[in-house]
Length: 88
Image 1 (tube, rainbow, N blue to C red):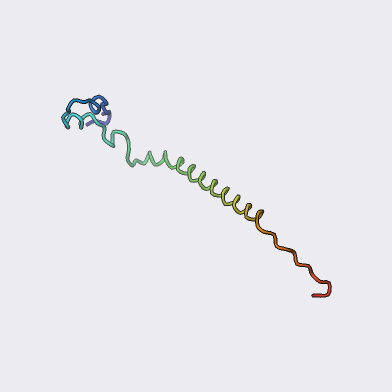
Image 2 (cartoon, helix red, strand yellow):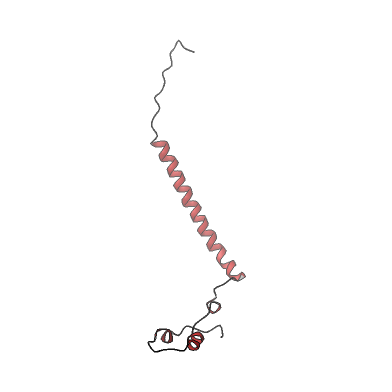
């Protein structure tokens, strides 16, 4: 099977019985679609993955910051203790 093999939709969707050999020769394999590990693919995907991880880090930081600020703003106020002039 060469790398330019494509899926023949007519063979896969026909109502007539089809020999398995015919289907196997008409369907593309995983290698035909370029799925798998290649160093070039890794070089291409690392910047995309890095941007995604950076986005997750930024959103998490924003959520934590908003949570801390809301906890400080909405915390019950402690009554101020009055100090006596006579007590030290």
